[in-house]
Amino acid sequence: MKTKIPFKLAGIISAALVFASCQKTSTDIVDKSQAAKINEDKASAAATINVFAKGLNNPRGLKFGPDDYLYVAEGGRGGTHSTEGECKQVPGAGPYTGRNTLGRISKISPSGERTTVTNDLPSSQTSPAIGSLISGVADVEFIRDTLYALLAGAGCSHGVTGLPNGIVRVNADGSWKLIANLSAFQKSHPVANPNPGDFEPDGTWYSMTKKDNVLYAVEPNHGELVKVTTSGAISRVIDVSASQGHVVPTAITKNNGNFFVGTLLGSDIYKITPDGQISTFLSGFTSVLGVAFDTQNRLYVLESTFGVGTGDIVRITPPNQRVVIASGLVSPTAMTFGPDGKLYVSNMGFGAGFGEGQVLQITVP
Image 1 (tube, one colour):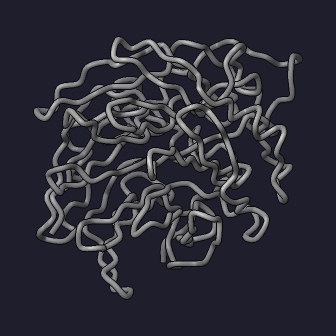
Image 2 (spheres, rainbow, N blue to C red; image 1 turned 30 degrees about the horizontal axis):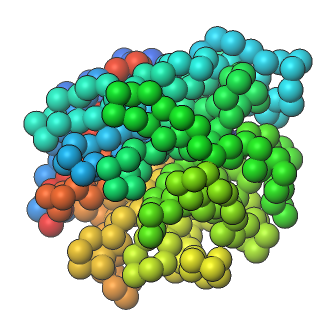
C-alpha cells in the first residue's frame, strides 16, 4: 500500500505539492543520466523509458504544438522580492518571494534540443522554512496556432507585483499579453469550502486543456474548474469544493466530450460534464498529477508518492483493469501523449537544481 505525501499545506500544489521529499540538494537526487532508469525493472517489460530532453527549470505542464515541437511550462527560478505587509500572505507557506521575469516556457525539437520561447514570465517561491519551493508557469495549451500559458506563481501573495495569476497569450517573438485575470476572478467569486489553513489569495493554478477553442483551467487550492475564452471571459464550470470538499483537484484531460480531473487528496478521478455535473469515475489512486487517454480509450494516470523514485504511471483498461507501465519517476509533475503515440512526462519537476529538470519519453506497451 502506498503512503500519501505527508504535508500540511495542500494549497501549495503548484509550488511543490508540499513535498517534504523535495527538500534536498542535487546530490540527493539521482544522477541525471540515471534518473529515468530508477526501478525500471519494476515497470512492464514492454515499457521503454528514455530521457528526451534536459536543462529545464522545474518543468510542469507540457503540450505538443502544431509544429510538432513539445512546449514545456516551467516553474522557473523563483525570486527574492517580498510583498509582506503589502497584501494578505499565504498561511504556513508564506511569505512567498517572487520576481516578474524568471518563469519560462521552452520548446523541444523532435531530436530533443531545448530552446527558449520566453523567459519573461513570473516565478516565485515559498518561505525557506518549507524549502523555497518554486512555482511559475503551470501549463501551456494551443488554440489553432496560438500558444496560451497558465500562470501559477504570480500575484501579490506570491511576491509578484503588477501581474496577477491568469492566462497569457504568447506571441511568436516571445512577447505576451495577459488575457484573463484569474487572481481577480477568484477574489470576486469565492468557492463554498476553502481551506483556511493554507488559503492562497491568488490561487495556485495547476493544469489546462481546451475544448471547442475554449480553455479550461483547474485550480487545486480553492478547488474549481473554470473556462476562459480567447477574448478573456472567465466563468466557473464547477466549484468542486462545494460537493467534494478540499480534495485538491490537479490534472485535467478530456475524452468523449467530458473532462476527467485527478485529485491530490481525494484519491479519485472525477468525470465532469461541460455543464458542471460531477461524478466519481475511478478511485484508489495516490496523489494524481497527470491524466491522459490514448487512442484506445485507455486512461493513463501519473501518480507520485513520498520519497525519491516513487512516481509511476498506471494504465486502466476498461472497465477497471490496472497495470503499472512505468515506475521510479522522480518528482514527476505532468504528462501528455505525443503525435507518435508515446508518453512525454515532466520529471524532476520539484526540488531539483536549476537545469536539472527533464522530459522523459515512454514507449507504452
